[in-house]
Amino acid sequence: MSVEEGKAAPAFTLEDAKGKKTSLKDFRGKNVIVYFYPKDDTPGCTKEALGFRDLWRHFQKEDTVVLGISPDGAGSHESFIEKYELPFILLSDPDKEVMSKYGAFGEKMMYGKRTLGVIRSTVWVGPDGKVKKHWHRVAKAADHPARVLEALGG
Image (cartoon, rainbow, N blue to C red):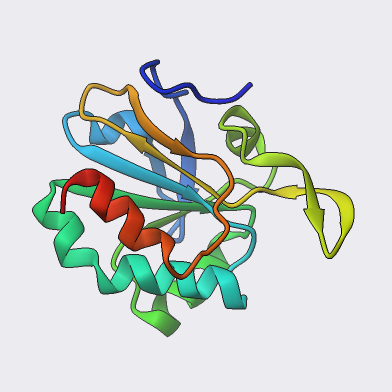
């Protein structure tokens, strides 16, 4: 299953870095940027996270919540947040169930070989809970947060 623009975003509940359960429905009435990334504190994932961090106040002006989701556990997320002073929520999806629902886990090319893994992607969920935009395969992690902000109108 994947997400489709104009349709309801798949519901989910995952744990954050402190072990608190966080659900998509908690943010109903706001724009929610859900970005999927492979691993905390790796070069591309760090660049993407820093992009969202550095543009944070602009996302807030757009009444937007940012949720990062990876298979990493709470301890890894907590370290990543502290190391880079990330102001947004990171959620753990160790079984990759939510990633699979969103089309963010599957076959991809890595170093010229087909492999199963996390597909760097982002979904913008509107205040009504519907998918407004889906960036299925993000190629340039460092530039991506600015493109997302631009789509929001910021």
